[in-house]
Length: 215
Ligand SMILES: NC(=O)c1ccc[n+]([C@@H]2O[C@H](COP(=O)([O-])OP(=O)(O)OC[C@H]3O[C@@H](n4cnc5c(N)ncnc54)[C@H](OP(=O)(O)O)[C@@H]3O)[C@@H](O)[C@H]2O)c1
Image (tube, rainbow, N blue to C red; front, side):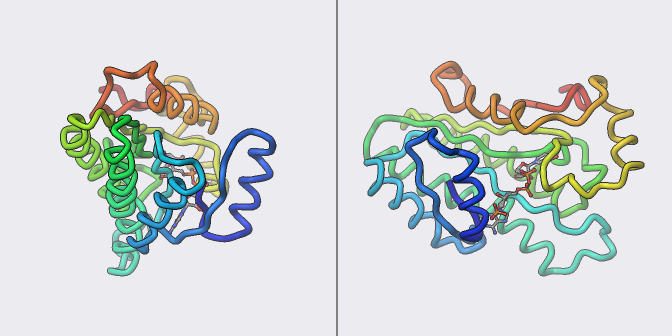
């Protein structure tokens, strides 16, 4: 489990409690070298890696007119580039052990419909992630490594915590199930894609959106 700061790692550790085994590591995933370091830490602690969930994401600016080059690059560095380098580092470990594995990428409905509460950099990075998922699914399939993408709509997390009530109402009004999703509804899908229950599923994008987008 990875967070940017000791504080965020400690917070996740207290949520995990006795469940495990697990290790908490800090990394800024904009730094591409961190991918190999994290994969090797898993090897040293657990002897290998079976599952990678690429969860890190940042929203970036909503307004296209107020999106500068640094904003754009930061969003892509976290939401897309880190997912490639972490996937490759994890797949390298899985390849060396020849035991296969599963990689789950956190996409977003914004990558499919353009994003309503999110800006162009976020939507473009998440759209790119669908392509990255399909590409890695093809490249890693001969190694027995599956790669899939989750595409949630609006979920009650820190990312959406401060959204104005009017925006929440608008988003709920276009969602057939008429509510925001819960984090456990996303993690349950991640567990499914990580597990052998989904052993013939790769390169797919699984929508978790209350019906807000049906493909
Ligand atoms: N919430 C939604 O409505 C929603 C909808 C669709 C998709 N998603 C996607 O779901 C994923 C999780 O988002 P969330 O809603 O849980 O948001 P969140 O509460 O803001 O969490 C974002 C996570 O990304 C990590 N992160 C951000 N920048 C990082 C960096 N440079 N290096 C390492 N870690 C970094 C954060 O680490 P720290 O713990 O250190 O802060 C945090 O764990 C994201 O990919 C997001 O795009 C969310």
